[in-house]
Length: 313
Image 1: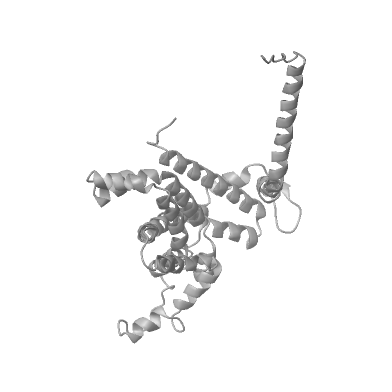
Image 2: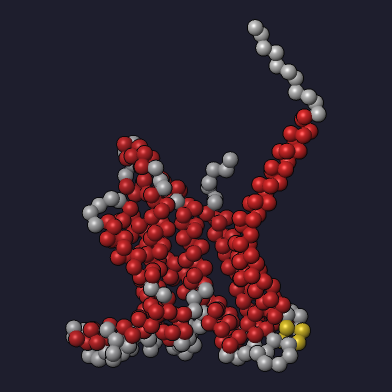
């Protein structure tokens, strides 16, 4: 017997299309319901504060009293603010030094703990441990270690006979800057190492083995294989490191209070002084918006630069 397939009525096609549309609509609303809590948090803790900050930056907004509309005067003022420009220059210098130092330490550590060897889990744990310490706590710890009398570094050097009297490392710009950089590298390098380690472990072992069989040396494999395949990972680590360095505040406030000679006042420290010491909230808000714009431009620039040379579909 031959089975006969009955034709589908023409009226059923629109009904099926409507059903599919309803399903897509239901799926879309369900997806929005899932991300609604995150969107609400972003709205409350980011978008609304940024909008309020922009509004405050257009006013003369004292801590006490009535605020007054002044338009863009806060923004024109910062262009001639020598202290802000000095804080900007210092922040850029600090960001450059700290980012290079962190990568100079974190990348070799990531290469070291990437290979399976004895006690590799212990090494990873020890290197990552400083990350769990809060930055304010780490700043207090290193301020105590650098204390001229009750600390560790100065009295230890004196005990070894390397100096006649215990030096005050936080009294001069050069030594205080060095102590802060070393502290930040000690605190952050483990986190950057984990990011880079993730990128290293994502590289297929077959590619490295094929390059080794073809006669590529270790440095050649690192330059032509490892680095190109870690572009996105390096971009993430760079953005995190540079953003954190530009927003540095705790270490300067706790360890040196902006000294010596107010030479360690970062941009965030200067915003803090203008907002909560001089009580000029409007000008502090304008500085915050400018800093946000700088961070956005730097992040976009990093992503654009690191995409150069990538194959596009």
